[in-house]
Length: 365
Ligand code: SF4
Image 1 (cartoon, rainbow, N blue to C red):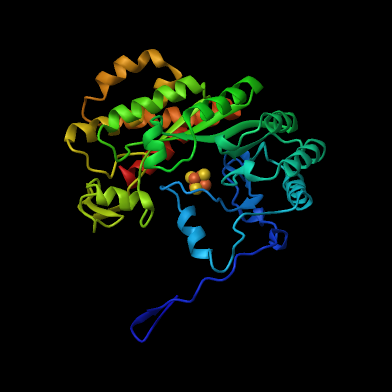
Image 2 (image 1 turned 120 degrees about the vertical axis):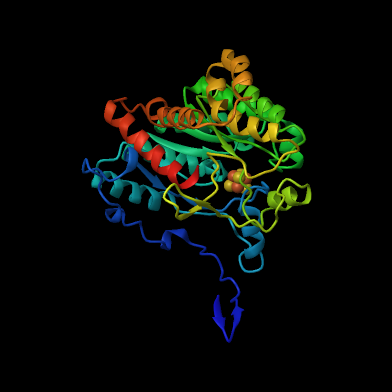
């Protein structure tokens, strides 16, 4: 894309790379060391095996991305050979200082079964570092979960998103039933694999609070290890953004992605919206907006301790405040380090967490 003679000229998109083994390994030496001389945050090293996702979730870029490349690349889902992946993992292992490998493919279990079984065999014998991967519940296969667990998988990242099946089907186009979700999560639980469930609250529905409560209840039933809740932030040009505008949930359609505020020092600051702080949607009453912003902060705690739900239903009536925000982030940090990956809790960990939170809130609160 370039500007020429006052107009923007757009080149057509090029074809997607077919053979991912042609991509050189990432140069991880470029990742800066931290104060303790370690390279990776939480010593977790990320890696991708495949590219692409064929699903049509309305809040995700993939549906439009696939349309964009439709004419030039019919084959959107591509993956590296097992040998190529294992070679890169060996290099990561030799470079040292990695406690976990995080396979961040959009949907790891799109890979063919024979591929995953071969990967498990080689991973167990040649790498043997605890790892995690991202799944779609409708594709889960118990035999593969058992094989992956045996190969060293300690945690699965799998989205629940919404507990209301109608909303999940009609608005989010998730393409799976609650029954199937429960079946998958119960297998993760029975196999002893920890689960990290992604969820969205603040959806464009008549009663967003009841909708969020249904999602909390489904997570409780699913026995997830850690339920992660984010607020819906409709990205530009996604189907969910179109839906929100059409139904009046995004009132000012010209609102820029970033908003201005005047800081305590009197300077203009650019504040980016965030899935962690407050909703960008406008509900039919101010009360709904307040309760959604607050419920978002306590939803995950309610999944772990359902007996707190009656208390939380009272707390969400209060004005949103910085204490609720800190509770949300500290709980998230505790689960993502100590609960999921067994990091030892310490004063320095808590201090680093608080510093990170206050830095984030300066930009997004
Ligand atoms: S399954 Fe995940 S990656 Fe695929 S379209 Fe849905 S949200 Fe996007």
